[in-house]
Length: 418
Image 1 (cartoon, rainbow, N blue to C red):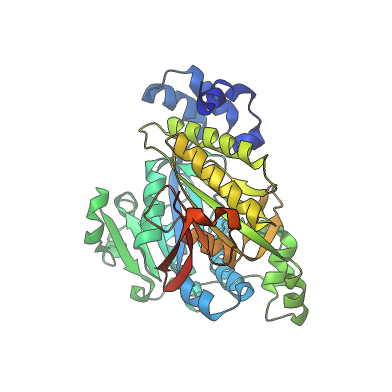
Image 2: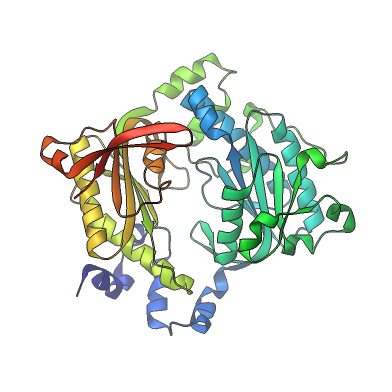
């Protein structure tokens, strides 16, 4: 019996922290159920949510990263998310997941908010964000989703996230046909059909903050000293760090204090590309199994797991040799199991946080570089090591030089070729 089959057989006894955020009991029940749509529907009924997902993505972040320090960028990226969260919270929305990087996602129960009110809110948020240095694109879609762990799942959730991340511009709000059906003719006059999104098999419409007239009023965020935890979006930091970030440019001591949070590490980022399945629970089972496999490998190396869910994993190491050997074993193991991964390594100063809700998260330039050479490339089953990481002498024969341009940045290093 291969490793993956052994893990599936032992799912009922698998520890939750090894499985990642996907509930072990749900996957264990799925192994005992009939693997069809009806069986999945029954198991997922408690997780079903019906309403609006509002997803956002920042525009122009690469330019800001090149022009400003990491701490400045973190503050700038945080500000639109504070606005989105505070406006949404006041309307009964709630944050989904941890808002790492420059994305956000909120869910609004369809029975608690009407579409015109939601669009008014998001237009007002765009008005406030418009005054800042970073613009965002928004996607809004009404559908049924499954909320499992910290994320929304299902093809409809994937749809709105993909539209937002890949097809929205700054100040733009893109809505689906299911949202358009809920709004009146006055809103319809502002909408333009996004003909370039025809491949998604349903119509999407767009309007821009600049097209709006009066009546979409903004609001003033609380001052840093007035914040309470109910105002905090689900940030990937400790509360102490978040409050210090907000004081940058206001308190001269804040930046010096924040420097104490930096540590030099080699970052290993593992992106897994799972085989598509029409049944979500089959996909999530694969997440759990892959995560358990990776955890087994972690135990054999001097590396620290920051976060991993079987789809994306981030790890750090003090020693570059440990990081390289760890990454090579993951790649070899995944290839042997006919699984597909892309792995990126980079070294530099990073920020590692213990989250208030439990677990850890990480930020820093090395994370961004590792992501660009793993998540942002088309090639699969590869290991790219950015030039900041020294490859041990006895491994160098396995690599060949590479150079690529991503987000207007030239990245160089070595690619695994064994």
